[in-house]
Structures are given as structure tokens and as C-alpha cells.
Length: 303
Image: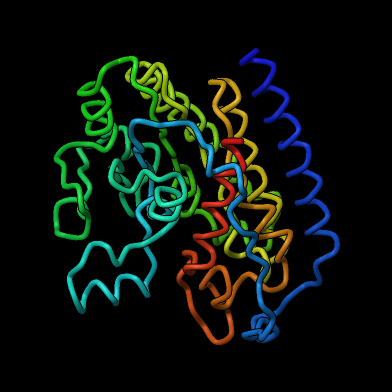
């Protein structure tokens, strides 16, 4: 039952994502640096589904991953630098916790800048944000070690929710070469490493939490409006993440379609994502409305 359910869900989502990306690339007009101006159009943000009122009674919520799980944006950082309140980093984790009535049972170990490699602790990396007052839950060592310790501190039969946003920073260093070149020759080796590491991460999480629900994020493409050709390599990233999640029988939260397809010409420049070419804003993170869309994607994956 479990295999057929997730196989059907993930394969259908993969087909839909592939079709949506192709449609976006073909239909979207080419954009120059001066043609992407702030728009008055209001991006569509669907309300949280009614099913959350009767969601499973999770005993805990553990948010893992990178800056998206952390709730980072330059605007949120500016607030934090004024009042030094970690709650300023409000993102999908806080929204999802509130919708599922898990605010008091939430632990967020996400780390801005985290990749699959650093999450596993390669190179002895620790999370600066977790240990400098930015985060609410400081920890030493790798995020994977902290997550494993948290999960093993609970009864093995506990039913909890784990969300994971990881993989985007694995390919961000080569993003510039992929903006206008869909073939993106450096992408394949980066994706191979990311898939292997993601599989290791999901395996470790499942071993530590046999009865947890683990949902993996397929991220949006912040450059998709200004550089439509970049949607093709972005789709390759998302499909790689979805494929690994499927192999581990874990559902995928699709942020690409609601942001890059449903709001293809209105999502950037401060609507759902801050990134903009004119006027220049190179923050690739979501706005508050964008984080709400991602939270809805997680909720849809949990249905």
C-alpha cells in the first residue's frame, strides 16, 4: 500500500512538473535585464487546505535543511539586526507548524547555506547561524548529527513530521552558467553528488525515526522569469530530488509549479521571491507570501 501510494503520487507529480517546466520555457518570452520591472500584479497565494484541521496527531515537528527551512531573507535579517529576535526568521516552518497546531512541538535545525555535503558534516562544518544567536536551537557538529541525536532522544515509535529542504545550494555555485544555457554541462556531476548525499540523509533519518513522515521540498527557481532557459536545469534539480525521495518512499512538496508556473510572470521582484534584475535585488529567497506558498506545498504533499 505504501509503495503504490507514493509511487503513484511521485510519478504523477514528476510528469506534471516536467510538463509544466516545458510549458513555462516554451511560452515565457525572453526577458532582458531591463524588461523585468516591479509589477503591480498580485501573485496568487492559495489558502491552506481545510484538511489541516483534521491532520494526523504528530508528536513533534522537525524542520531540516537550508535557508528555506530556516526562514531566511535579507529583509528578515534586517529585522533581526535591529531587535536580535530569532523569531524574525519566519518562513514556511512557522506557517506549517501553526497550521498543524505544532508550534509548541517544533524544532528547527535548518542552516542557511547548507548543502547535502555540509549537512552530512563533511569537512567538520557546523552551522554558524545555529551558534551565533540567529537560530532558536543552537547545536554543535553537523546538522545531520544534531537531527539524529534529536530523533534518537525520542521513543522510536513516535510519529512525527520531518520536512527537508536541501539540494539547492549544491548547484547554486554553477547557477550562473545555467541561466542562459539549458545544457549546463557542469550540472550532471553536481546532481550525481547531490543524489547520493540526499539518499544518505534520507536513509539516516528513516533509521532514526522509523514512523516519522518525511517530506522533501522540490524548490522553486528564483531566476525563472528573468532567465526562462534556466527552468530546464532547475527542473533537472527538482526531478533528481523527487527521484531520490521516491526511492525512499517519501512524498515531495512541489514549490516549482505554484511559484514558477502558476505565477510565471509575477512571482519575482518582491511578490513571492525577492530576486529581481531591474531594479536589482539579488536575494533569491521568498517573501512572506512566498513562504506561505511553500508551506501550502508541504501541506498538499501531506494529504
